[in-house]
Length: 211
Image (cartoon, rainbow, N blue to C red; front, side, top):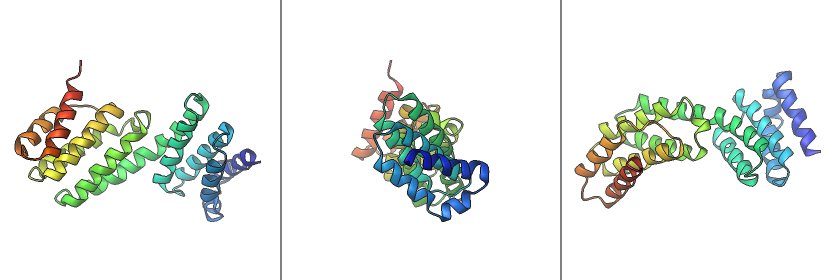
């Protein structure tokens, strides 16, 4: 019943132009509830991810919750290619949109350290969703982190979170690493008295210089 219901909602949204009506009727909450209640059903997870993707395409669903639902589906069925495919399609929509929104705010407020630091943290957290979802977005994310670190080079806190985010992007997303090593060396030299900066710098350098 849940599987067929989700399929019907997906068809309504995708083919019937009913995204707004479905969202108003509580389709997002219903889908989240079905996914949570039927974690052992791969078909429910597949259909649920597809419904959420359709709703997200029309801007009718919260992006952060969508990403979490996709990750939970993948974790529940670690070896089910069909579940992973549906979840990755959802993430491939959610991650670029979220990264773009974060990046746009960072671009507008480059001198606002709090905005830059929060943006860096958001990008670092998004890296948890893996490389497939980041195609086309990783280069811009790395550039924004490096720019924020350069503009706010006197802040040990911004340097620390920047190095942390760069490490996650390099390791989990396979983002381009150009400029990361120099940024780590500069941060470590400028903030040699900060144990946090030095630790993140050492970890990033070690990853970048691995065999």
